[in-house]
Image 1 (cartoon, rainbow, N blue to C red):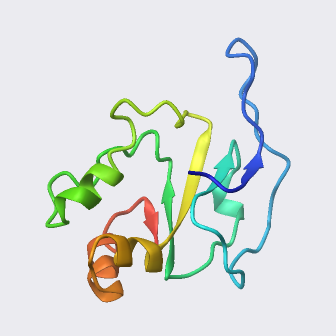
Image 2 (tube, rainbow, N blue to C red; image 1 turned 135 degrees about the horizontal axis):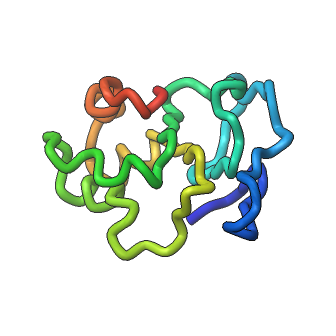
Image 3 (cartoon, rainbow, N blue to C red; image 1 turned 180 degrees about the vertical axis):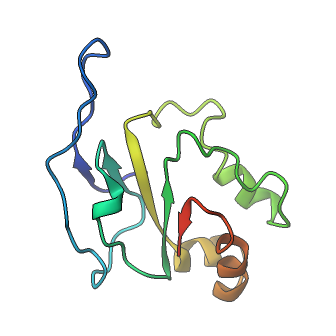
Length: 125
């Protein structure tokens, strides 16, 4: 699912928490592939691309966030990250998605997807 990763994963749970050396990077003018993952990065220093990209911050903590929404059931299942999925870890601080791809795959307009995502505190659109 993931095309690229920035940062590094914590290898030893007994060690102090690792924070990547990547700071103050500007991705706001880039077109990024769907599924970019940021590992152990302070995301407050990173400029993210605007919609039609969107970023889920702390996806490990924010699982199943569409559960009570009006989203199509298939889309809800797509974002139920921790339901038996072994590729998501606490080290994952952000995941970037391409709204064009999701809107097309789940038969939604970009506007409907934006309206669905814009009010979540941990999603940057």
